[in-house]
Image (tube, rainbow, N blue to C red; front, side, top):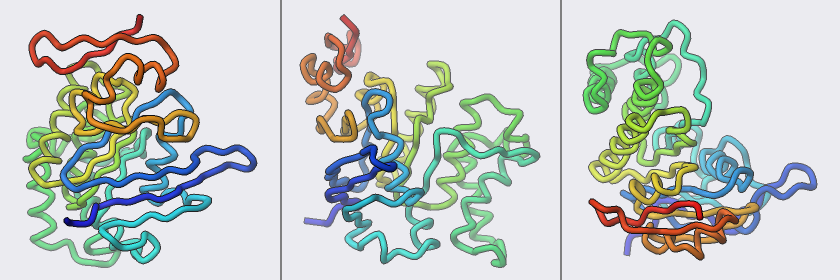
Length: 259
């Protein structure tokens, strides 16, 4: 049986005396999308930052592809794991093609030459995310959904095997939410990418994720398939409010609602 792509054991994190995460154990496989859900302040974004090596855990062990996280050099890690924070950096004066090209940085470094392979990877990422007509547009001039696609294109150009997305749909309308999450799901299954995505909407997580991981007060309170998680009692334990579930009238997948 192949080893998991990502494994976390007994991860703790605190800010001063305040515990943020406690006893996090996770085993994540290749080619699957994992939705991180839970109430505000439950530790979702912090957990994603720890996996992305943006912050270090207080204690615990993380391994990627069977190798301890500490054994990965920064460039090697960046070639395998791509992280999109909830608030992406400013892109003033940058075109879509220029942003996507930044994804090749881990492969050639500051002084490295931008090769034909790099250019090919950039153009392939732009085409796959259907941004050809926007390639020479300024990123700042695009709609929220188009900008999110541009950042995903950069991650594709990076050729990473793991994508970490922190609330990529939080500022998008329904159509762009569906567009971005459908793209992520297609890419995960096409390229066997491990995707971890923080979502506030449990119904979006149930529709687009292969598995759901629920956090509350810094601990994992539930983990399983959407069908396993989308139960009234389980949802109430996660979010602390009464919720009901009914089958979608067309797709028959579970849909939740507040009581």
